[in-house]
Length: 407
Ligand code: ATP
Ligand code: MG
Image 1 (cartoon, helix red, strand yellow):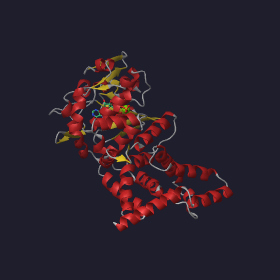
Image 2 (cartoon, rainbow, N blue to C red; image 1 turned 60 degrees about the horizontal axis):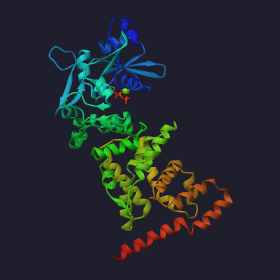
Image 3 (cartoon, rainbow, N blue to C red; image 1 turned 60 degrees about the vertical axis):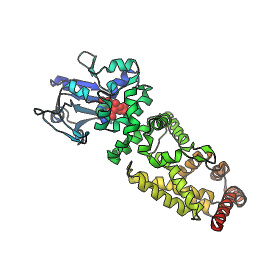
Image 4 (cartoon, rainbow, N blue to C red; image 1 turned 120 degrees about the horizontal axis):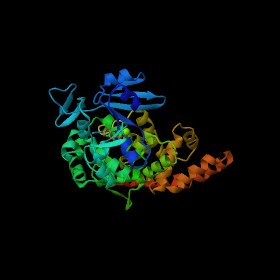
């Protein structure tokens, strides 16, 4: 592929994450190419090529299942240049000015992401001191950090993500402004932030990334209500459910098991949903309705931060909505719950809650046994349940209602 461009007389380099990962001895996720050919010229070289992106126009060249991104060197705005760069309050809205490789290097985000691998002589081209930072395991923005964050606030999230994933130290000059500038993320379109959240938590280092985001005071810019809840304690214990769920995500990724965005978001927003719902229940609301209303309120507020597609919002609410139903162990209810299409995900969620000490472990264990049991055993379990786990929970609730009503 590089050779095709070269044979047509263009310059072609590998750049970005793949060079960085190759230097670290890691297998790159994907390959990014840059060239001095314009998107139209790239299209003329490769038949199997599509031009994509508005903010950042580039070519996708298809090779069987693989897509290789081919970008044209980005330049610095100038009268003589073709293309356009659109700015608003110091933020880059569109960047399609073409230029030289050196200019291209300076508009990339981090020094270690601006290394070019030249296939002509197998050398690494470095204009920004990336090799030095690479050797010292330092993650450093190119240029003036505040200006670079203002141009694109998502770079703050990228800084945290790369530092954790690579085990690099974020240079103090790049770490310091993050807390102050985190609120700039509000300018970023919610769908882009949704994509970034998936990259943050599905990279295999969700727990560390979560801790680093909180450490740099930027988690609140993504999940304000969750951050608020995390500051509080539950019966005198710090809330560990989310960290626990993220740990499970990391382990699933390590084992090559699938992970789903709706489960992740259900976990990220669970504390606000639960807190709101329990407050309503304490005021005497029906528990199923309380969870429904709380879910709607939390989603309503969160979509301003990170939009999510319907395919995420719907199952996420179902997981939440089923949680109070696990405590209802009478009549046909447990059977109906078993056949619910979202039962499995909601049950996994209950297990996580129980493991982190937030839900009753006896209840989670009851559901584990109930699924495995045959019919006579199930009948016996239901008779037993009229007294034990769900029963006690409902009684406790009722007495709380009575107290609330009396006061
Ligand atoms: P990953 O392994 O996560 O794909 P990556 O470094 O390849 O990491 P990409 O998002 O694929 O990250 O971007 C490719 C390259 O484009 C980066 O290495 C960087 O040089 C440049 N780049 C990406 N996003 C930005 C940005 N917001 N600002 C400046 N340069 C960026
Ligand atoms: Mg990449």
